[in-house]
Every structure is written in structure tokens, then in C-alpha cells.
Length: 343
Image (cartoon, rainbow, N blue to C red; front, side):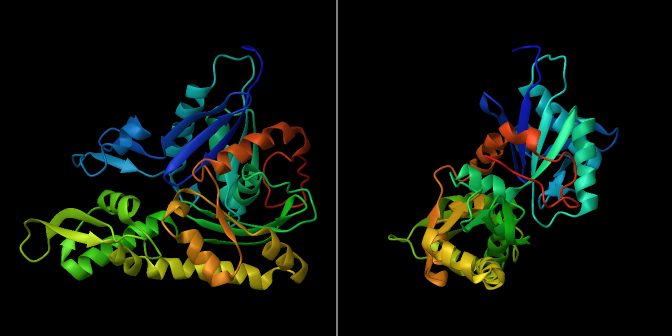
């Protein structure tokens, strides 16, 4: 109804923000980016419109990523961005919405408090925080309340979350800052080192999406990239193969695999047996890299499945959790890890 409150869930990613409105599904999918005029502090563009300006702005216009590695890096810009996003998905109501926000397992108490304050300033009445791993597990269709261990790997743009969930909570987890953006940086470094060619982050991302892989493809793919030659300073183009991508992404992928092994080592034996039987759930935008599921399965010996909608899985899981807001603790979770989550 128009005059009743709406509950919304926010998957606040480093590169993409997805908002799920209870009863209406995913209503917003925008880039987590703002463009600001440095001369007067005025906010010019938000979301996809700001993304189009990347690398093409004059000196006085600065693109800002207000969220880095799942936590706030610029409080003021985050609050203004959230206010705009929330206003787009909520109509006039007598009540401010209750907001559920997904946070990485590595979040600190200070970071949690900043996120809560920013959401309240943006127009939320109450703020609830939920670990990304739990939301991803629910979005993948797992009954997290059972005494049955499941491993969830969420490879986003800023962080990679590896967790084992059971009985409505996170048993073991590891959060590392090796994710999609680090993959892009690795590609930039590789092209610079091998071809003496400087390319931008957006070009590296396009290259990753088109021919990026971490295991050999069935057919070798090629892509032509253009950049600035570091020898002559003039524009030049080179051809990159999918085999080059494997070499470029070897180091960051080894860090992801190391985090997976670390979590498995710390997990109780009974839950490791459950994970071995149930398999590994892989989600997140970075997880769509060709062959990542095969490589993890090869290195761990555990069946690994990429969820159908990897980019939105966490948002859908958080959306399902909206029906349990009355049973959840409001505010900080760092000081209340025993909160009850019922599905």
C-alpha cells in the first residue's frame, strides 16, 4: 500500500549497488560511483551516468568510489548516494523504510557504525546488517538453519568472501581484498610489462569480460586492445590472447585459492565432510570469470557450482531475509554475533 512502510535490502558493492524492495523484487541496479565538482563540492552525476564519465572528465570533476572493499571510504558521498538511490525505489510514505545492508565478514565496529549512520542520514528508519555470506547462501537456495555445512564464495569487485555457514550463522570465514578490481589491475600490469603498452582500468575490465579466463578455453580467443605506447608515447594496438589472460590472472587467483584452503583448514571436521558432500557455491560478479569454478574444483577436489544469477544472488538472498527483520537485532552485528536468523 502507498502509505505503509517498505522494507528494502541493499547489496552495497564496490562497483555495483543493487536494491531489492520487499514485494517488488530488484528495483535498482546502479554503479557505486559519484561524480563531484571539486571547485564547489556539487554532486553532478550518480551511478551509471557517473560511470560514463570515467577517464573523460576535466580536472575540476572528480569521480569518487564512496565504497571500497565493502566499507565506506567517503562518508558524505555515501550518504548522498544512498539518499538518491533510496528515493528512486520508494514512493511517498508516512514511514521511513527499514533497511537491510549486506556487509563483509571483515567489517570492523567503526565501519559498521559509519554505514548505519550513513543509511539513517539517507532516510532509513532502522538499519539492519547482514553478513554477505549468509545473504549469498540464502540467495542460492540453501536452508541455512539446518545443521549442515555449506561453503559459499562470493567474488565481488572489492572483496572475496569465503565462508562456511551452518545453523543460521557463519562458522568460519575469510575476507580478502583480492577481487574483480585486483584482477583488472593485474591485467594492466601484465600488458604494460609484456607489451610496453599502457591501458586504462575500463579497457582492462572489458578485456577481462571478453576473453578473461583462469583455465584454458576450449578455443583460444583473441582481442585487440588500444593504449599508449610507453616507448614512443603514441597510440598503439596489440592483440591479447586468452592464454595471456591465464598468465596475467595467475597471481590474484592463487590468493583466492589460498583463502579457500585457509577456511577449509580452520573448519571443524564434521562441517568439512558436509562441504565435501554439498559442494561449493560460487557467486559474485568476479566469479563469472571463465573457468574459475573448474579451477577451484580442481584444486580442492570439491564440486563447485556457479549460481545462475551470480551478480544478483546476494541481493535476492538479502531480499528473502527481509521477512525476518522482526527477529533480527537492529544495528551493529560486530557486538551481537549471536543474533537469530530464521527462514
